[in-house]
Length: 309
Ligand code: UDP
Ligand code: MG
Image (cartoon, rainbow, N blue to C red):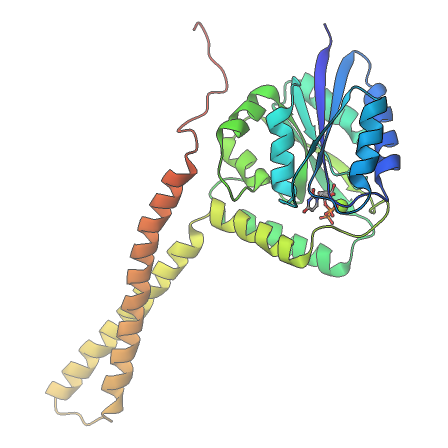
C-alpha cells in the first residue's frame, strides 16, 4: 500500500489565488510517484468567494477535504484544525498563496524518506515582500532565537513536513496561544532544513495584518521564553544593589559628619524602592509563569523511539 501524504492549506480570503494554487499543488502531489495524497483546505472564515470555490473543487476531486470555520480564528488555529483531521503518514503545511513553492514538497518528502522526522523550509531569500516585512522578520527571528530556551530555526515559517509521530505529539498540545514553530522547536526530534527561495505572493494582499503579526510575535516570545521575566528580575537586583550601596555610603558619610544635600536620601530611597518593586514583580511573575506552564498541559516528555518494548 502507498503511503499517504496530507497537505494542509489554510485559506483566508484567497479567491484570487485558489484556482491556480490548487492546480499547482495537485500537480506537485501527482508528480510524486508511489504516494497517495489528500489536500485539506481549512477555510478560516473567508468572506469572499473562497468557500464557493472550495465546494466546487471538493465536488470534483475526492482527495480534497475541506473544513470551514464559523469565523476567522487565525492562521495557526487553521493549521491546527488541518492537523487534527489529517490521516497521512506525513503532514505537509503550506500557504495557499504559492509563496512556499509546491515543487519543494518533493524535497521535503525525500528528506523524510531519508529519516527526518521534521523537514522544514528555510528561506534563502524572500521575493516581492516589503522592506518593512523583511526587516521586522529578520530582527524578530534573531530576537526570538536569542530569547528562547529551545532552538527555533532562523528564517523559517510554518512550511514544513511532519512525520505522523510528530503530528501526534502536536495533537496532545492543546495550548490556546499557539506558535507552531516554537512548539516544533520545543518538541525536538530530528529536524532537517530544506533551503528554498520564498516567492512573491501569487495574487492579492497579505492576510497577516500588522496586528496579527504582532500577536504571533508575542505568542512566540511569551510562550517560549521566560527571558523577559529574568531580565526584569535582573534589573531589580541591579538597581537594588546600587541603591543599597548608596544608602550605606550616605549613612557612613552622615556618621563622619560630612554635609550633603538632604534630597540625596530621597533619591536613593526612591531608587531602592523601585529596584525592590521590580524584584517583587519578577517573583510574582515567576509564580504566574509556573501556573502558565501547568495550564499549557504539555506532555511531560516525548519519546522518539523505543527498543525491545
Ligand atoms: N491565513 C489564514 N488565516 C488568517 C491569515 C492568513 O488562514 O487569519 C492563511 C492565508 O490564506 C495563507 C497563509 O495563512 O494561506 C499565510 O498568510 P499570508 O500569505 O497572508 O501571510 P504572509 O505570507 O504575508 O506572512
Ligand atoms: Mg503569504
